Length: 162
Image (tube, rainbow, N blue to C red; front, side, top):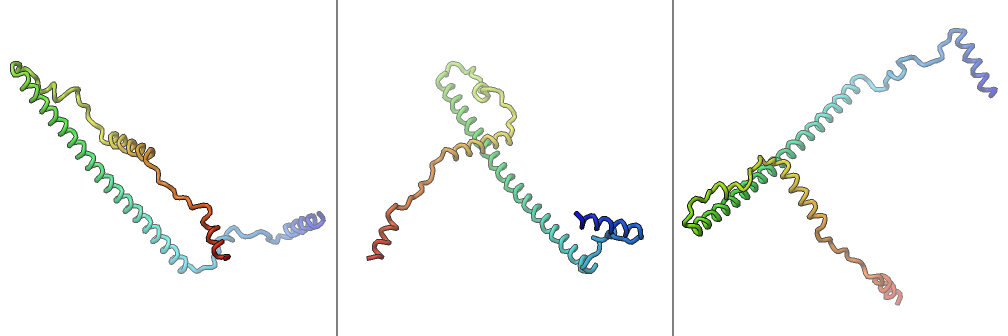
């Protein structure tokens, strides 16, 4: 306590005698490194940031490309499914016409459009397909983990001791 009181008295005396005891405002601004070196460091950090930015852009482009491929494949898959469905419905129509040769009033539109087709949202269909795949992977076959025989090590040690 006495030391603290003496220090406070000393600070008061210095303030009264107009002696500066605090650090200047720009104390931390003084650098040990030269301006030229700081420019090099700044240029290096900017170059590194630019490389990171380019890498991120490249990564994004690759992801977009992969997504585009998946989207294209998915759309082709949908088209082929629709084509197969329509072909099977046309075959059904032909069979119905053959069977009902007296009635030629059968309307092909009844066969082709069972219900009004809504515009398919490809993104939603892809999400559903991915969820189904993820669920099927969850319940898939688990890999067997081989366990070591419990006494294997001890038998080796017994043989060494003999």
